[in-house]
Image (tube, one colour):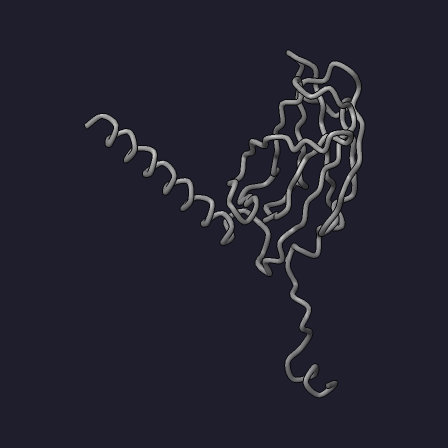
Amino acid sequence: MRALKVLLGETVPKHTILDVKEQFVTVYYAKAEEEFSEVNSLKFPLQYSDELYFRVPKDITSLRIDLSEIPAYYENVHLKSYRNHTELKISSNGLILPQGLLFGQNDPQLHYQIDSISDLEFIFSYKMRDIFEPMKEGSVLTELVNAERVKIQLQEELLKWKLDY
């Protein structure tokens, strides 16, 4: 085994996925007509997989969850009310795919409207997909996101044409 290591070198990939331990999941909360701010936020160390419990103050109407500051691919991303286990609908600056959420740019964000939820306690869960590619802008992730956006735009245009004729 040692001889193989000498011939082939280290087998641990050297890319920015190893920088995950320096990242955080940040939960921002805001009342109606308020902007998100660092003052109204909670921070948790980013893990490869985690389930986070948090509580927000009364009268909060929206949440923004930043899943680190680097491009990534996540699966099993869910925000649920703690008491009723109601899953909240997500909107995102990444691509929402059947397999998960793909972020090809820095600063992945998830947005949730919680004004119709009476619960102040939530459970957020996620799992980072193992992609073995450099996690930086311009990587294969960026190309996939751009290609998917073009595909979605073309499908929407085609649907408009079909409805018009």
